[in-house]
Length: 115
Length: 114
Picture 1: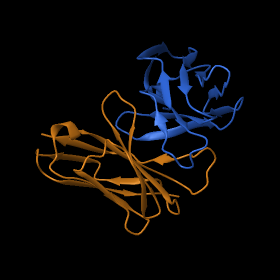
Picture 2: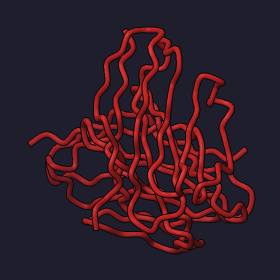
Picture 3: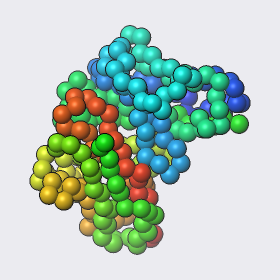
């Protein structure tokens, strides 16, 4: 069983450019989450999908951020017109429909540096 | 709203020392509680969990007991190793909110010295 896969692992971009991250969840997991983590902080929730439906979005997810999960499998997170404050690690996590205590499993993250 | 408070780090211990990392929570109802570990440059790995009061989660020598009366879920290990050096996150999942996203603490960095 492969784990949650994220790519690219690292991305350096100039301010104002668009970036896209991809997440492949554990197969058959219908729940998928995106979190953001900055240095010295815990993960902060961004958005959540159940199958292809985006069920919840954090107020952290500004209009420049968009996430999709078109076929209920992989997901993409796009950031438009990047700003230096977007520099962070973007974490994806997935979980099965029913799991003890709402357990989720994380990928290794995608580091974004905006210069 | 729901929140998790962890002891501030960094925590520096000698190999084979006893470890305690404190975690307390605020939540309505009875949440599920988790500890995740993050090694340098990596994502978070689930370390252990407890889903109801008085449950004890354990894994790799780490333990934590869900204490409803003190709203705590302290992480302990009897004898730490250098390989345990990492950042540890306490998290909760609200009980009655379906698949509501986990809420994380800020993390506690542990450094173990040989």
